[in-house]
Length: 476
Image (cartoon, rainbow, N blue to C red; front, side, top):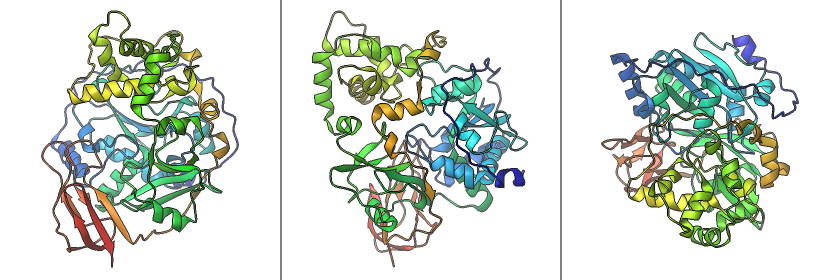
């Protein structure tokens, strides 16, 4: 296996939209039970502070439960301009596969699927169905956006459909990021907690880079070390062009969920949208929507059979006619991909902004859409998919797409800022004091009760600030 994985050929490929139909659903009995060994593994993942490395920051240990039979590794690299997972799979494939094997053998799962878009897989020298180890196989995905959405990923990889509002475990699946299983491997094999982050630095830059840096490193210092400047009229994003957020790069720090730092012109419509207040976008939508239904026609979740209809949510917000209160709850089914806003709406409106506002209000009231209804993809789905290449053109970032160069060096920042709230759940609880010296890898915060994670020092130094929000460590 080592020879095959170390001699990876890189070649230019085309990016066809055509794909094979999704497989017939695998059988899933849902009665597999965890043993004491599985529970011990779950605790080890928690102790290492491992979190979803490219998503919302859900603690990875919390996904491990009874009933799982398939582990899916999300290597789709959903957002444009990102090469983090690509480089990890190219340069650290053995460690990634070992991480997948650890998860499979320490849960009730029977197999692991390394899921990659077809063109990416071919560039990495893979073929669909390739056996990478006793437990791990390659699964090709169509080259469409947003294939990284776990509902779409699960359907394409297994043929299973998650009921609206349910979790992947309900269909016997755990979805992890490529970097997450890399971290699991490091934790189990070397007892190394999460202290570093892999990410892409690119966009409107001369070159794109993939780097591995200490968690909490300030973005400004990282850009300076790479010799990257932010041109006038550009903004910096934490995350991808579509779903990332604009940050103050003079003050922001890398977190456990930072997948990329991108520099893009603020003149791009997709950036203008991020810089427009939510209230303004909502008012525009409620006043100018023509109810053409195109946002619903192209909604990926709707095409998978979900009862999410963005145009009806806009209509409901307009106060047009009698509204079923249940419609508002469907906003929680949105994955936030932005297709409704940037590819569908012909008037430059943002159904997504409307949905985000509703999701925020629903979250405050602890309300979400849950249904036991059985769903199936619509007959129109295959004809309404948007290719990744077309998506890059739509949002205006194609010319900034450059293969990233991996910078193999140890970054030594002068200080780091480690958030206590870098994950979903209760904030971590500091266990060090201001002025205390700490070493790289030393625990600096305990997990709180309930859903939570511990935190570890990403550099050796002295704690200059310790509070419920963050710990700042200065190198000495």
